[in-house]
Image (tube, rainbow, N blue to C red):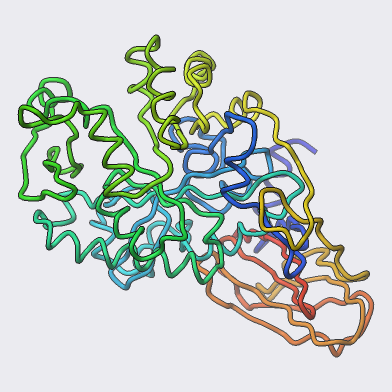
Length: 455
């Protein structure tokens, strides 16, 4: 059949569902942790916004979406980087921009309002719950680098330390709540360019790893930035961490590490001191220009960070030439939009197997799913429902559930009474276009399936 013929056939259907079964995740199995990642050979590739930012490869899954994260993990990325914002109704969502044209600031609209213009934007807790099974793969996988950005001036008027502390405390609390509810404290690293946000994370959730991000502009005199970028720079009355804070036009609000007084340490030294002290972080995320502006000194820069026990991630590297410089300098992780390149060039993972009760590096052997437990197929029926085919091993309690991309329960059925064997049950009614998740729960075991409804 030709491509046009296939397209015509799809268009003739009221709804087409593509179902991709996912692995069974046995209850209680040990999962890969950030400590396991940091014990692996270096460097590892980190998927920028999942499978890469949209502007790099239009054919790739959209950035900051469940499909992008799943595709990255399935194709060999061990860590995905994502961006977090908070809506006016307190929902933590995965989206890069603080504001959308014609819509306004994310923090000024509800999640339901956001979905009317960007239906693919997932809740952070949905991403955590849908990605967690990847951390049970044979090799290290399923780690999340979650960036909480300092709110931009265009969407936030908190220019003093006291005002910012209240806002950032609430933002961090919402993020931490989602991570803890998903029980992924050991699979998530909170990343931010704001040391005050990381300080809040350290106080509220010391068990969650943190990474302080550095833009090369923060090492330069603020007076030099307008001539280099065309943006205006304005100092604001914040002094978090003993640093001077600036607004860059209406698009950024960050501290500078450049010394403003005689006798202060050099900019890079102040960054390291802030990382270890105010942010209390064990990792840094470096703008690649910090290294590429002087490649000969790059190994010395990363070596200095390693000497303080810091993990070093570099962003965003999309060419083999840049990768060679950054990897040769000793970077631990390299963030990239070029996922195919990153998977090919990253160091091979050690896929060790550890005793299930062990808490050190490595992972446990996964137990097998009970014989006969499986999600096999989901297909559309005339009423706009999904006909889900599945198998059960016995007549014990079992539940079939349908959840949308926002994490909302659409439908559920108790199916254990159907007994052992193969069955078909309809879920939902007049389903809207979008991505859904089917979950079959039996005792302490689960099987999952992703489906996409096209109308």
